[in-house]
Image (cartoon, rainbow, N blue to C red; front, side, top):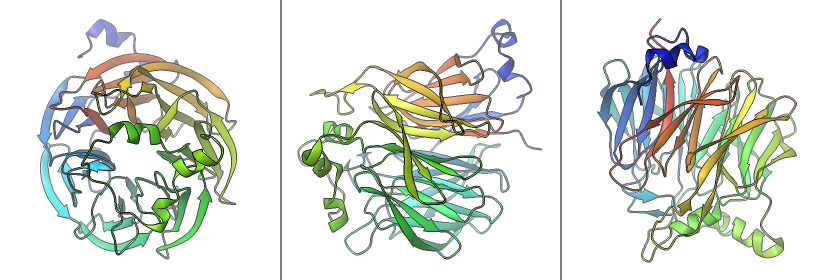
Length: 383
């Protein structure tokens, strides 16, 4: 909903953002919508390939990248995996290029190294190769490499500020993959009870991983005849087997020491955690899904979600607030003052003042099916 002048006057976190834009994916709507970052006014909408997922803005080339993971459906429950990533001009809101990564498929996570002009795209494995990360030259917009991650379903990917080390979370596989980006090789695996979203602290010293794998979420989405990801020795080693051995691991965020590549702490959560995001100002934003199984709705019966905020330095809990249903993606403004939470079930985006931990607005995102708001990107105005 567009904000009134009186309302904006009471929102100092919005000051000085004239010309900045928020981009939001509608997964079932197959669109990317662009909103004024000051007043939430809809500026325009770009049609995308079916099932768009994540977004990543490249300020150097001034392009917005969008992954399209599946022809329909979700992870493990889909009508076939897509192979494309799309480059969009955020100023004209026109598609510049659709890059086909075939035979790679299931592109999802995006991470950018603007200094080296590299875009990293996570892709799912197949019968003849594990999942991995495709490396794209952001100038030529051509693939220039692939890094295996050793798991069938790498979903999210993040890199350290130096651009030397990358981390992939692998859904049901019981490890986080650590890759050397300069040599293009898998160098380590950090034990976790399955994993979802991840983020790297601004200083590169810590990696924050949502765990365990949200198996209940995946199971509630399954239906007879649904397509599944390929089986492999690694995929057989799932969080479900860990559950049967000793009970489901506690929900929360595993804290990995980047130097030792080991889990050193856990930030507790009451509910399953999907997205995590580290701001430039040293805050960790954690999205908790509150859900119960539902025989009709494949995403489950959802209650309002929760945004919990921690310090990336002290790991102290700073506060929380309710969100829409099904928080799935989180991002922030470059200065770390504004936070955005995309909620896929309610198809809304929460706009949050991260200094006061108050909600400034809730933006509704049109959709044409179950999944709604998904990928997010904050786009500063042209210099």
